[in-house]
Each structure stands twice: as structure tokens, then as C-alpha cells.
Image (tube, rainbow over all chains, first blue to last red):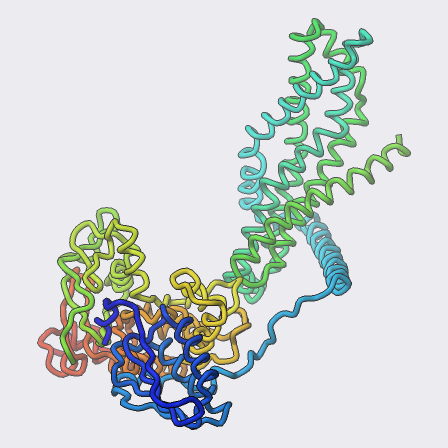
Length: 382
Length: 257
């Protein structure tokens, strides 16, 4: 029967008998998937037009029948049955009979075990989103608690740390990130110095470009920019890595072997980030200051010496230390949220993707919120 | 059985780097036949299957399905060819983010102009064929491994292909589920006349469903036997073949002989 597939995709329906009487439909040609829509519609309309007292379907001229064609025949029988019209199939070939037998008419009308998702209103969605947000918050806080207790344990038992992993992630998050972080720091310094010099030039206050840049880079931009880059580079990578392990049941394997997955998987990543991000912050800040120096020397006719002394005068040791503390906290948050999102993964590839996105978004959000808290607290401590 | 060749493999070689997996493999699969490719681990069963479905491009030899080269460069021919065969992968390979209905509907949406209602009815019918009626809106993760395979089969059959390929259909299934799947494969073969190529090393499955087997061997780097499995078990002169069918490691057999 299959070679008939090469014939033109056509079927023909002939009618014998008068409307309202005993009717014979002759179905011939090819009843297949590609003309299923047309076939279903035609059979339906014939049934409605003719309103037969009895229906006989003659299949003597049938050249090709696949399961979709068989489906149309079974639907026709079902439709007739619903209208209390006796329906029988005539001249059914052995092959066609076998295909028809394969399909159980009952399965065609069985309702889905899970109803289709209904479209919900705005209030429902708002409510669901709030519940999701609240439970997410609880999960993040729980995980943070887990992480901090594990960190405390690690502090007391430094030999329990997988230092090889820590070094590996220090390389991945730190060394491998040097080029991009240096480049962005430099460009940020250049842009900031250039834009502020345009304004300060008007007052002859060129020399304050140095102090402005020093304060901005050391206190805010250095730590924030570095943390955001680490969230994008490493937070996402941690989420994807742990998420994939979750999908592959590797995390379950760890649990059954008696490892604490947080200590085994998250601690090396978080520790590595906490060690490496302050260094990256210093590095980024230095490059930012270098950018400012380039503009100061080339564009504002300052000497290197005067630029450097002015920068030094603008920042105190307290600023540098607070910026380092900030960057350690940012590292904890960014790496922590990356791991937490990874552990949250359930399902397949799509869940890993959304965990990765969420790790970056939540990471940046936490950085900004924590930074505002720092701004307030530092203001009063100083 | 009418002997119309549906798949023709001519002088096929498979290589990974400098490693030759097999060479000079030729055989045919006839219309309506269930052919099982078997052999021990590492003999290249799955590699052969991936060649057959066009995922790997062979260094030499060619493969025709319904007369079309699976490595044809014509996009039009390949499109037609892809409608002509379906593949059930070892894990089912369902898309995790889609419901079963969406998984099965995917090829229908891509390759036909059917209305959504018609697609819906075909999907329901296909899921019914594999005894998954009612599971349209389930996600793959919400059903068991055996059900995932059946759903994968429903998707592979969505377009009523003339050929179905199966990679280790019984892997990871309990014996009863595995027999059920075998029976389903047999029923579909008998009902729709679909030609089937199955890679497996499950002896029970082989004797249950295979019309003919092709046996590969790692050291021979090619086919060492072809034919009816029961015949081969009883009458093959080749020790490697009989020891496989009788579940006896070759070394032990040689010692006793």
C-alpha cells in the first residue's frame, strides 16, 4: 500500500441515495495525513447535509490509508453513532482493517487527566506571583543560613574544604576574568573622567577630576562593577553547573553517598569568589584610575604627579577597607545565589536556562540592595 | 513477505578519528520487516544506527531509504526523507518543556498544513495508539520511563513514517514494561506495515520481535551473521554467534570445547 504515496494526494467522495434515506458514501483514492483536514470537514458536512437514515461507507476504491485516514473513518462512525445513524464500512481491505483495529475509538474521546491550564485573571496572577515571591524569599534565606553554617563549619575545620576545587574556581572566576574586568574598568575610568572634565573645565576645576574619579571608583563603581561582572560570568556558570548536575541526578548521588551538597558543591565556589572578588575589585579600580589618569594627562594638561597626589588626598584607608568588605559581601551573595538557583532546578534543560537567568538577575538585584544598605551604614559609621 | 528493499546499506564504513569501528557493511531491510541490529557492547550498533538516520556522515559507502541517500545534499530530498522515517531514541528524547501533546504535535505542525483541531485529533489518536490516552497535558518529567518511551514512539509515528528506528527500546525498563513495549512494536508493525530497525542486545526481545537480525562484532569490524535469530541460535557455524545467543561468554565455551 505504501508505494501509493507517490500518487497525487487526492481522495474522492461519491454519494448514492437521497437525503434522509439510506445513503452510500463511496470513499476512494488516498485517505492520508496530508488531506485529513479536508477529509474531516467534507465528511462532517455530508453528514449534516444528507441527514441519512442509514450510512454505508464503501471503501472498494481505496488506494492508500494511513492512521490519519483511519482516524477520519472512526470519527465518521462516532459522529453517526452520536446522531443515532447506523453506520457500516463495506469492502474493507485486510490491510485497512488492521490499521482500523489498531485505533481504540474510546481513547479519542477520553478527557485529559490534567485539564488544560485555564487563562487566569490579573488578580490571580498577582496572587500567584506574590506567593512565588514569598516562597522564593524563604528558600533564599534558608539557603543563606545553610551556606553560613557551612562556612562556619569550614572555618573551624579548614581541612574539610576541597581546596583543589577552590583553586579551580579561583582561576575560573578570577584569573580568566582579568582581561574583561581590566578592559571595562579602564573604559569606565576614561568615560567618567572625560564626561566630568567637560563640566569641571567650565569652572577651571580640572584638578578635581582626579578626586571625583578616585572617590567614585574606590567607593562605588569598583566594587559594584566587579560584582556585576562576576554575577554575569560566574554566578550564571555556577547555576548552570549545579542545575545540570541536579537534572542528571548527580546531586542526589552526593546526598546518598553522605555528602552535604552545599558543602561539597557550593562552598568551594563561594569561598573562591570571596577570595578572588576583592582582588578583582582592586584590579578594576586601579584600571579605572589609570583611565582617569590618561584623560587627566592627555586632555587636561595635569602632570602625573599632581593627578596621583590629588587622588591620594581624596581617599582614605577607611574607604579602601570598606570597599573591600563590600566586595567580599557581594561575592558571597553573587556566588551564593548562583548556587542556590542551581539547587532549585527541577525538570530539564529549560529549568537550567531559567535558573541561569534568575541567578544573574537576582545577583544584580542583591548587589544593588546591599550597596544601598552599605551606603547608609557607612555614612553613620564614618 | 514481499521483498521490496526499503533501506539499502552499501559498503558502509564508520570511523572515529583513526579508529575504524566497522568497514564494508552492506545489507538491506525489506518492506514491513523488523530487523534487529545486535552485538556486544562497543561493536558499533548505535554508530550504525546513527549512520542510518543520517546523523553521522560515513567516510565511504552510502545508505538509501526509499531510494533517497540519507546524506543527500538536496534540502528538498532530505525534508521528504525526514517525513519518511521516525526515530525513538534511547531515553525517549522528549522535549522537557513541552507537554506530551505538544511533543507529538511538533512534527505535524512542521510538516503538514493541518488545522489545529485536526492536529489535536491526530495527537489524541497517536497517544491512544501507545496507550497514553488522557496524558496529553502531562510533562515528560511527570510520567514514568516506560511511558516516556511510548510517548517518544507516538512522536516518532506522528507522520505515519514508512520506517521506524529504535535505539535500545528496552534499556532501563523492567521486564514486563519491556515486553509490553515489544508487543506494541509488533502490533504497530503488523497493523501499519511499518518497516522497523531496532538496535538492542536483549535476547528476549530479539526472539520475540525480530524477523531477521544483523549481528556486528567488534573484532571482526563488521557483520558476522545475518538471518533468522532462531536459525542462527541453532545452526550457526560461528562460535561468536551461538555463544551470544546462548548467553555464554566465548572464552568459557572455547575451554569446554
